[in-house]
Image 1 (cartoon, rainbow, N blue to C red):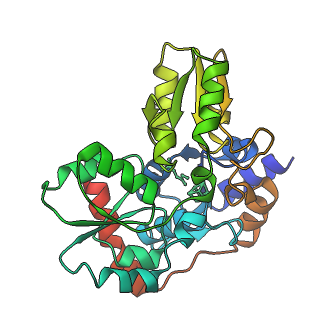
Image 2: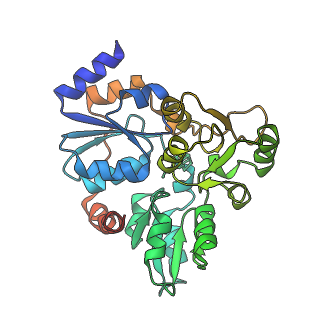
Length: 304
Ligand code: 13P
Ligand code: SF4
């Protein structure tokens, strides 16, 4: 019933629902498009809808607004934040950058609009390696806010980017010991991991990539079982596309669901319906922030 009401409102208001892979299955099923951060940012530039309802987290809705300042961007719950974005307060980052005046500033898209205004290029987990590799090897770079993704890029490219000391509370707590236990139990399984995980976890992975890249890898793979080191929401689409394959989720402890991102899980059919009906909460950004943040995102899109 609520699904039909959402679809009706969506048509009446010429709205589009964009959802991230970490949202709950019901939300992914109602969405017009489900993707990783990069695909969602690209999709936001392509839509002719009047309203974008972003079922994800705050920085993703901000990105959609920066790319579409004339459209109404709705976020079902303004409290859907991101611990990684929160780990880099803009004013502290501005002060930090004073020590690196000759460095280019690369920021992972999981940061606030204010941090984006201080950045030269935005990257996502889907294009970070490619973008860094496209810069001359001697380019001095500050990378923020994710120390794990930054260290992974340094490792893969042989660079020495200066890293901001931030992390995602969901990925950072995944333990290498858990991966080893699962590998022992399922020696045939292939390990896939999101680059926001710690280096010790990534070192055990057969494949490291964004949510969309992991999904693609699993779907194309001839292997039948996978040890998955990321947020649990991705399993919905992975199982849907690969019903015959087995998935074993890496956790920080035997019996916890600490790799659910509580921010992503704040999106549900009830608050999506209410947001479409009342056209609130609306994501508002001032013109100056939009103007200053846009260049770094557009630079990313041109390099992707
Ligand atoms: P993706 O870039 O894979 O969408 O990841 C976004 C995110 O929030 C990971 O925690
Ligand atoms: Fe942020 Fe981590 Fe949640 Fe992704 S999983 S939205 S990085 S808190």
